[in-house]
Length: 204
Image 1 (cartoon, rainbow, N blue to C red):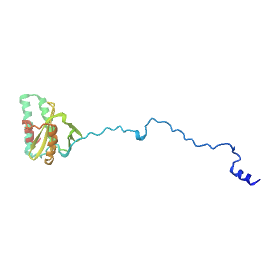
Image 2: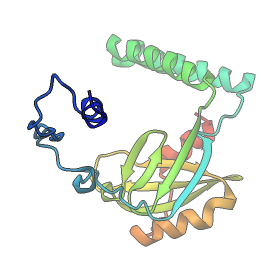
Image 3: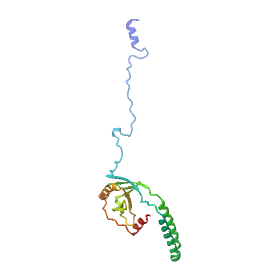
Image 4: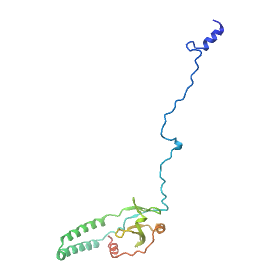
């Protein structure tokens, strides 16, 4: 075998035809998907509404005053007097049963310590009492009340027979609270009626 034949022998595979061209790698098409590229995907998230100015504070749900022995004596005498009125005059024993149930409920209520509640006043949303939201649209006005050293706001509802919302607040937060409420509701001068005055005097 000559030298040229030896060179050709190592350069060419005897099992491969000489005229076969090399096959190039052809990329396979990726399966089509309905999802747009990441750059074109738009997140469907609603923007959070701006709550406006916020004031946070914590206070007791009501002012708790320890009752002395005289208070309980008067309480028992009033209950007994109402029952005697029913037995000797009204003679409606349902009234006596109602007085007893109310007396027991009131006694338990006066013994329960007040809860510490977190409050948040939002300029755009309303008043959060714990997790509950009272919107400004539910009220027609507000007023301020002072019970000794304690300050409270009263929200007057639009509905005639709906109960008002009374909230105590620290004196240092009063200016901010009044400013936010004044921007959404008119301020009225409040006067306690006979029942409210009696309840506050009795410390119920």
